Image (cartoon, rainbow, N blue to C red):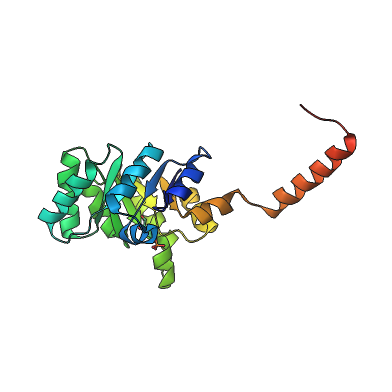
Length: 217
Ligand code: E4P
């Protein structure tokens, strides 16, 4: 499973990229606002840090303007993936951009039938929002399982990008189901490294090592 960072904070992205485990980045208008930076400036910087796909979201609601926005954003770098909303205009834009071989991430997906439409429109990625479904007492991970089944039934190449991840269990379940990508906030990515028994075990090993009086180097 690929790991994308769900952030527009270039400090966080640099730190995660340094682990060698980062495969891409997703941004959205809320994350751009949180970064406090200009859209094009911050996307350009992210694309210098990460070679993998960097999602940049359109904001127009009509097809013509959305397509122009997507075309303009795609010129930032060859690794930009254009994020369009799961609407009729969004899927029309998806088809048009894919015809020009531009990567497209269809976002704000909350049902398996929406995911089916996005795959038929040739989306590179579909972004089902698991945390926001859990928030309204629907099972976000059940949706991921349904999409996996449907895509495998028809051999759709659209990649399932699990979004709105709120905890490490979402990452675990996404991997169990066989999702292609998890886009993860930096704080949750850091949590994945941690286990109290790792810390406790390391402390005990180092204590005993000190008693041997030896050194490796
Ligand atoms: C990323 O592609 C999505 O926009 C993001 O994961 C949404 O997360 P949120 O529901 O925590 O805002």
